[in-house]
Image (cartoon, rainbow, N blue to C red):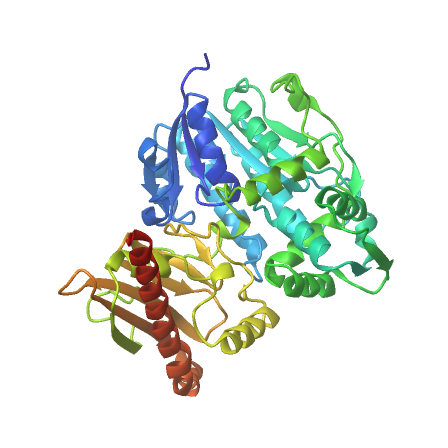
Length: 500
């Protein structure tokens, strides 16, 4: 039985971190998660089994407090797709963590980085991942840096990019980077390595390459994905003029991955990323059945998607602001001007029927409003590098704080009563949408309160609000009416089913 260690997981609301926590618990370790906003842990299956430390990764004092008494610190933070200057931010944040870990007497740091090739000029993204690993290795705390190429799993950004490109484009104009050799690895094997690193000997301070059993080009990955999914063979026409920047804009339009995130992903896959050594197997042996191959990893990921069992997704890690950002519920609104579009409506349905409709909005269910207006606004957001409407939802029927919901993110939820969404579209200000269910006088009378709120930034923000305000009746008014009608129809259908 592995001795229990206290493991701190940063990035616990992200794609890898959110899956690592239950694996560490299953291995018998104690877990503390470090998050900027404790609300984002609420609703997770493992929330009651972990300690929660609230800290911004740039706050040295708060990070030091979070690392107090920790045996193993998992550094799973990155600023990918966060705009210019992200490399400097990543290095500073890593240095803050390294210094705090050394001061706290942490026994080991574990970091998941990228599999960068030797002898090639690295992209800014890949160079930054390498630099973070160097900072942690120089911390004085024994560190294991796992270097992985393409991580394959339901909800990973790499998998979603591959899946949507292949499914949506039977004929593709491809850049030369589709012929780069890659060694993808299944998320299950990544998690197994990460958990195994908790018990590495104290004298191990180094990088390890990790990868699956298959070495493939991106073109071969798309062709094999199509075959597994039963699609017609994809046709590809290679052209030399598609730069990573142009490719990322194309990926941003065709897939749910916005161009700001697609660019570093494309820059990564343009490199040859193949395992150079497998020394990790000396400490974390391969399972008896071997590592998971590319085909099997695709089958597992598609099965999770079909069964609606995707615990985390690439979009889990983006967007929700730190607790220091203003909330529309702040007393007297300390953040300045706040424009409000408030609408109340009586719904002839029980509160539970109205809540079910509200909780299922977005994604494939849509927004119960003038569809063309939402589509046009979504495309404008995509062209400007925002998430648009293609990000969808993690689960079609269930929401928790931190979940992405098209261009919104769940900021607060009171089950059965209230939900607040924060906009992550490109806007000259901050925006929220609040939907509230208030029980009425009778069992079949419910008050439906809806508020759209906007905090403008400067003159442009104020001009934006008044430019779109005339359309609020069509967009928000229509949405409220249609949600109310859907709830009333559900209530009527439920009554009919009970009638003998």
